[in-house]
Length: 85
Image (cartoon, rainbow, N blue to C red):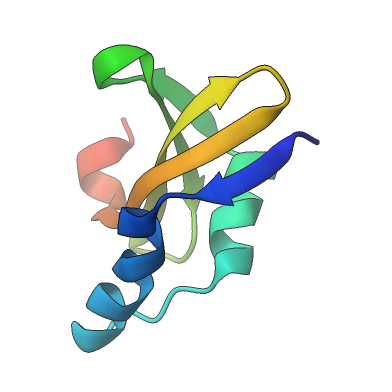
């Protein structure tokens, strides 16, 4: 597995989501990157890894891939009904 680093925005996102009642761990983000259910192409050559995290939600992780590194730009939970289908 490539080295994974988190942008400062991604680091701050843990607290933002916790304040909204959605507690996410780094392990959840790493799992989404290591064993995603699907990957989509995103804005600016970025990729979005998606992993089901419970009955109603997926975790979407926006990242950049360069050489031996993955850089997590941001992540967000989404409703499965919106992103699966």
